[in-house]
Amino acid sequence: ASGITKGAFYHYFKTKDLLCQEVLDEVINDYHKLVEYIATDIEPIEQLRSIIHKIVELNASGHWVNCRLMLRFTSDSHESNPVVQRKVRQFWQWYTNFYEDLIIRCRDGGQLGTQMEAKTLAKLLISTMAGAVVLDKTAPDDSQSHCLAEAVINILLA
Image (cartoon, rainbow, N blue to C red):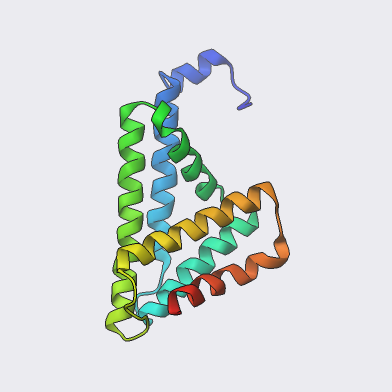
């Protein structure tokens, strides 16, 4: 599929696991860059809104496959080598902590309620977004993608 011979492939990557690790590193790096994209000079709730809108926009564009890749790495990591398993686990810990910290900052600013623990809200947010990615892959509905970000924010505000 890559258009190179098997020998050329193994010249660049000694094993398929090393290719997998390289792709995983690139995807994780893209997520870190995405988080850095968010303006820090705006209210935390606007930062949260911005990151969710950006992820929804990227997923809808068809050019960003990182969400699907991370979900695939996650579901298949039990079959992967220990390095991939560790990197996937570390990614989800980082990603959950990112949202948890942002939710806490929103609460500190009086922009979100305190009915649920911040970690629970972070997991709810991530789960909702991951579910949307899976549904969009299996049953695309472009008419609803623009509403998803606001719906997720409204769930958090409720």
